[in-house]
Amino acid sequence: MELRHFEYFVAVAEERSFTRAAARLHVVQSGVSAVIKSLEHELGSRLLERTSKRVELTDAGVALLPRARAAIDAVREARDAVDEVRGGLRGTVRIGTMISVPLIDVPALLGAFHRVHPHVGLRLSVSPRGSVGLLDGIADGSLDVAFVSAPGRPPPGLRVRQIESRRLDLVLPAGHRLAGPAEVRIPDLAGEAFVDFPAGFGNRTVVDRAFAAAGVQRHVAIEVTDIASGASFVREGLGVAILPLFAVPEDRRGLVLKNVAGADLDWPIGVAVSALRRPSAAARALLALIDEKVG
Image (cartoon, rainbow, N blue to C red; front, side, top):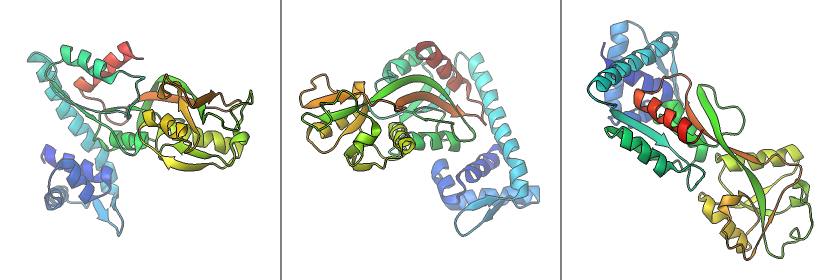
């Protein structure tokens, strides 16, 4: 058996799809199928069963998966040890981050990391699906570390450490019926059109949960993915929004900010890693820097 056999098997097992595994590994699907067939022949047991919708692990596949992951981790750690002896960390750290969230100065953080570990490659990516997409990237191994907003308990197999939190406030257009009252509560917002983010974004999850807890239905009229643009849509009268203060321009002409009383609108920001795979030495060094600079 070769390391490649384990890498291909783990990719198919995690993706539950030969097609997605091939895309993740940057190879053709027939190559993945051939490697899996070779591994099954060598082990004398079927590891994967194809169904009409997805790929499922057999009992033998379930037994092999943690050992295959351990083998991959052992080889990576061996490479890390040699790299350290050769004069510093090498490899690549794949980092997921959120769109337009200045609470964490990612360029400054990665600049500080690069000055200490210049031979480590850094790949930064965002997900159009928000934090849910980033968490999926951690789960499937396409990301090593991700800055996410994950209210509540993280999905199985993931670990999220909170490093920041911000209160979300109601942003209204000037002249709105709720601009005058001293106190606004969620039931007062029934029937309003909202500017918000797609499902899967952490701040959307926080607001959805607050409205569900109050038993109030909410109509999202416009979905945006750039948090910095939300207040501009409110100013133009396209809806109201619930946003962190940093997303509201200093020039607040045409806007009114209100606290929503009696609602849990705390928006958490954290760093996510796999709870099943040990991070590489380079990823561990980055996590240590995050603890020092941000945590």
